[in-house]
Length: 150
Image (tube, rainbow, N blue to C red; front, top):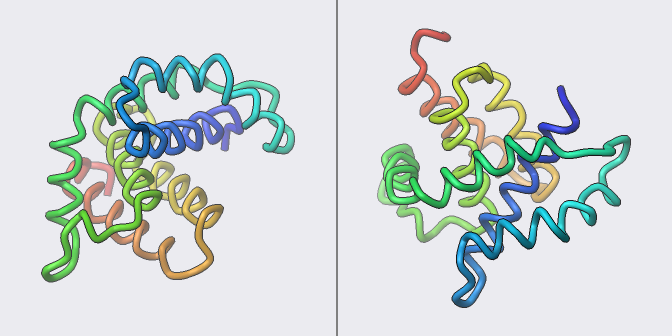
């Protein structure tokens, strides 16, 4: 696993969360704040990481913002029973949005790697069954979007 890519994924999840929680900040402002300020904070907290794959961060963040409606439709179609996306905890929703975005727009990353990465990210935020939930949803989506990889 590339630590630069892992940290870019973490930054994208955090930036999507921040964008959703911000009161009127544009996506450009959030992205710029992450690149200019928050990346350094991430690097200070991530062991053995000296840089972030900023290209991956920008790709994931921008597409997760611009494809929000399509991605959230995909999430909702993969929820059990009568669950709606609004019932999901906001960090969990951000993880799924960025993970599905990577499945959609970064075909060079194998689907199994994407799933593994976002399950690991989930475990860094949650102690419960959330990682299993993320694994199930991303696995279903990956099988639908990238059936040829399975």
